[in-house]
Image (cartoon, rainbow, N blue to C red; front, side, top):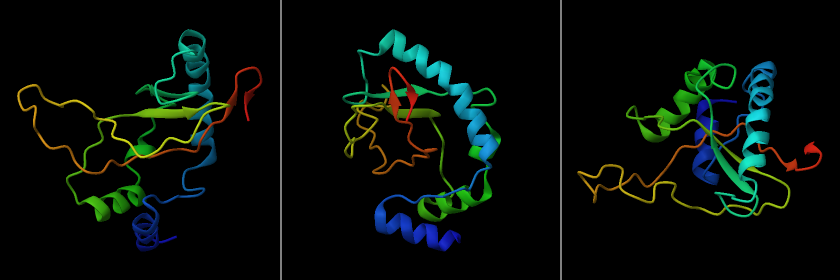
Amino acid sequence: MSVEEKIAELHANGFCVLKKHFAKPLVESCGEAFWPILLNHLKEHGQEPNRGPNRYFLPMPFEPPCFAPEFFFDATVLNIVQAAMDNRIVADQWGCDVPVKGSQHQGIHADYQRPLFREVPDLLLPPYMLVISFGLIYIDFMNGPI
């Protein structure tokens, strides 16, 4: 996989997939640490999906193992992002969008639906958003991940 191939994939599809890019233990430890957070959220807010039917967005903790510098400072990921968007990129969220059993595909949408700054309410928002996903987790409420 070359950066150029991934940029071409990004332009062709609107996304690119970096299969097996991160070490499996790194991703697994993040998932294991996130699992109780998700279960607690579903217990408290399971009837309040915030991304459509049976879809939930949750902020991720900025502590290891959910937060790992490898996710944010990976040379390949940064090269792809910078080639697609230039060097003025900013990460402003660390979150997880989780579809559970019975969810529906989420169409194109803007996450920012209100002004970022009260002082500049008509500030134009960028027409794109970079989203880094570490695989979808399909969950059956009674049986766990599918």
